[in-house]
Amino acid sequence: MKLISTTLYSGLITIVKTTAAFVSTKIVAMFVGAAGVATIGAFGNFLNIVLAFANGAIQTGVVKYTAEYQDDVEKSKKLFSTSFRISVLCSLAIGALLLALSNWLSTLIFATSQYGTIVRVLGVTIVFYALNSLLISVLNGKGLIKIYSIVNMAGSLLGLVLTCVLVYFFQIEGALLALILSQTAIFFVSLFIVYKKKLIVHEIKWSLYDRDIAKKLSGYSLMAIVSAMTVPVAQILIRNMLTVNMGIDSAGIWQGMIRVSDAYLLIINTALGTYYLPKLSTLIDREDITRELYKGFKLIMPLVVVSCLIMYVLRFFVIRILYTPEFYIMEELFLWQLLGDIFKIAAFLLAYLMLAKALTKVYIITEIIFSVLYVVLSYIMIPIYGVKGATLAFFFNYIGYFVFMSIYFKDYLFRNGRV
Picture 1 (spheres, rainbow, N blue to C red):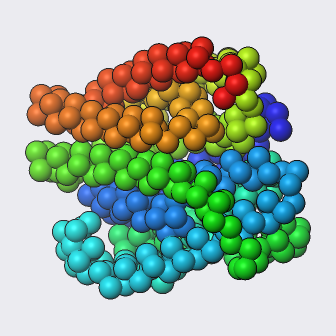
Picture 2: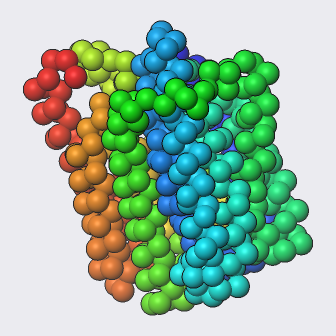
């Protein structure tokens, strides 16, 4: 699998995903305004946390070991079967908790129990998300990028259709339901595709559960759970501070900036996820790893910088196209958010090596430290600079993250000839 061809496929996925995300964002902004965007952002953070637990947070481990066991049929069957059992059991347990605690969780997330039904719908359907996530991870690990691309694009289009219909009829509740139901719908599309291609499904047997493989996946589970907890929780705390100090509309403006950032960087993040993790997992020589990292920086970072420049120049146009006039104040957030994005991607190019080599302790420590730093910097800067303070905190936090990653991996690769 070549980095350039993977990036091209990632670009195709991104065109569809970004278009779908932009149209969805415009519809949400038109019908529910800045306050609605903040509410949907809060639920999105909650989803990230819950969905990580729903399949045991094993996605990254499944990608790594699927790539690693490519030529070992028996190990592959054990991996898929073990992952399937973990996904089913974890999703059923989380679903039961969501059903039992629906009203309390609604109050915790939205400060009202009126969205308890939304949480219950999530509880009933969460098993489909977990199984779809497993299928996607295996496709990624096997390097089946064409099929992976088809499934991802189908999911984006289904999500767009559901968002348009449900927001029109049910406003905020419709947008929340669309986030949930799109995952359910895409599972059946994924299942149909892999079944027709005779992939994965035929190799899964409940009786082939393997404790050693489950133990290996657990290290990645811990990393994924920490990641799923730290970033969304940090955003929840920052959003709450903006709401308390400046009102929910200001929190919605900041959330709108986050959505823009996530959308235009989608091609980069998709390329990293589909190429780097499987590739780095198979490399053990320091020279090979260094060469691969250099290739990534040479190809990816110019693309990131150019993308940021284009986004900054077109910021007024972007706001006008994606949002409504009440979002024009977002213009002052672009500079620091985009600069922060550059350092974020540069750091992620290095951080993927932690996932590929299962450096669990370092990964967890850095995730916690820099998420806490992000919140602390926001708490310092928001009272001084207002909404812009949150993006300043983002910028300085990722400078620190990149510097740390550069120093750590220079030392790590120097000390280890084979890793």
